[in-house]
Length: 198
Image: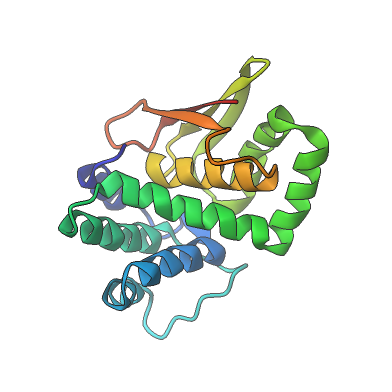
């Protein structure tokens, strides 16, 4: 799904103005702690000195990528896939988002609107959450659609997990009801297609 070299390439291109909400960093730390206290401690060291996360504040995306790299490396050390570990972190974040106050409101809208309308709302949600990249959605058929991510510094694996888990949770779908295929369109997986079917 995604390799360490791709994440490190995106990390090398980050600038301090590219930011993510504290909620994203907090979700990554929860995933790191779930792996082990040691992994959680290593991830926390990447925060700014004395930094306390606030859900609605913005922080450098480089911090998030560094934390994801710690988790990915821990997964590889345990014989697991780097990309799958990032995907699972995204899933954790997606489920946490649906439990948040903003996420609950969006979930109520999703239930009333249906799956295409829910997916159509992801680009605007992404534009509010992060200040980098371009995001769009198009319907492919009555039961499929495609999200297009361009220059999204977080990358394919985490975003795929976030989208699939938050959408499934918001619509109370079972684990196998929503299928996806992630297709990178550049070398470092900052641009990609996320095809979703149901």
